[in-house]
Image (cartoon, rainbow, N blue to C red; front, side, top):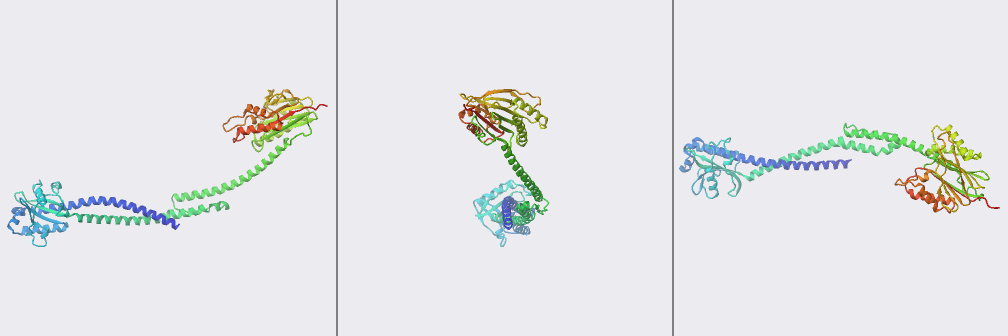
Length: 541
């Protein structure tokens, strides 16, 4: 936390210093322009007062040039001298001079150089630029009253670098009693003094700004430290204890009361922590329940698989037929089922069925249907009669209105005659000994469980040595790939034909491989159940 506080105050200090320097620079630039104008105004004001004094009525009666020509002074002259000295001192001027112009030169009548000595006999003659400035001032059109409110500075002439000294000067004419300019007052101010004064003021402004900013930074830091850094540190510590809090089931308390968004954040964190504890507790219970259900479903899968014939070869002592079947549920348990069983020595019963729906309800309905179908078939009833009896019983106790499609057949192993009935199930595929697999267009009835008055029709399939019958559920034809294309019966027939001369097991494995290659990584949506039987007949003798 000390490192965090140090970095925070350092960043704030840098930001405030930069802001202070920018602000001071802007203020300094504005002050520079303003103070230059102010210094020029003050110098102009000094020149205006000096010209007004030299053009006062008492001086104008004789003319200021009279004192220069006669070399005499009087009370008025002395008063003028003292007033000019005061102006020179009060305005801290660089120079204050009164010039008398001649045709080829100008001569000092008064000069600040003489303020400490003989003020009348300071005689210097100037030629060139000084003559030009004085002459310009003498010829300028100016209000003789020299009233600051009426005069305009644009009528006066200023010049820098007078006598190789960095100054700026205002030249104003002095009038005699006839209101003619007879002399010129020149008031000069040092540019160095102006610049020095300005920079001293700017440095003072910058110093004050930096001091104010530094105090603001310190106050701001202490405020941030109290209202932000300390609460956030406390909140961070609480966040780090969350795993332990969740594990122990004890909610975290932040104890943050700042009255702002940080307190709202802390309250939200406490609420989230409590909700997380509740969620994890509920999730633990749900996980345990799921594990229990999963265990029970696995057990149900084993039970269901155990109810279907799954040991092959199923009848190793029988040489008159070969049979193989498989069932892959879409979930742990499914609604598809197959069955085959010997009714007597010469008759084989075969069932292929598909219950509506999936999962546990379908599995329960499947077991009920399987037991009824096998029971009525073992009673040596015909497929037609067995389906009608099973349909009647299911309709009597079917509150969920479920149904099952069934293909039921009985094969006479002596004659090879297959007597079958179809209750809304898929058409079987049949292969003659010298032919290929084709769909057998059999007679269909309604599915079992739909209506208790349904009557079914039987048909016969004549099987000879080498004949094969393939039964399946709709999960084969309706297997779907990632592009939502159906596998279909055409692809099923093609797959059957690739292994049609092989054993029933090889045939089912060939169809299963074709389905897997077609579906690829797409999920399985329906149960896939298949059965294949090959008839050999009785051996002669």
